[in-house]
Image (tube, rainbow, N blue to C red; front, side, top):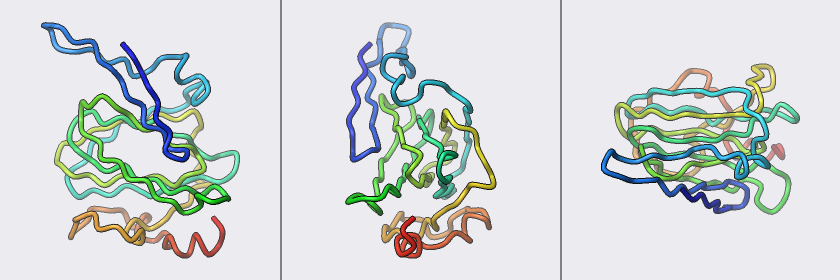
Length: 176
């Protein structure tokens, strides 16, 4: 089984080559030699089950509490969204990746990025792995519908907390 990594200005798409035989296929999601520089240890693993039109995020944590994330879609379909909050030329750059359940790729999002998902199908399940623990006092966010992207969702299912985050423009004006 082979693994390759494509870097999109910090967000990395990790492509896997599954082992296929008459029983089905086997996909190795973690190999120490590939992930050691990205995630030398794993602190938390989340399994999310969501319905169509659910919006989660965009979330980020500050400073040393920033959470890197490895995301893999198990079933269904979703958009994985990240916004670069690192100082420099890519500050505010948005990356959107459609993820399909059982596909042969995952996404790695550095902690200096805001991250969220928009669920496109019912029964979408995904895992999110992080080497840093969740720290509620350091959590911040960006309102998902201020990115200037039409996600095609007329009635999002979103928490009051996520609706209350400032706009992307407000975050950019503040410098992160």
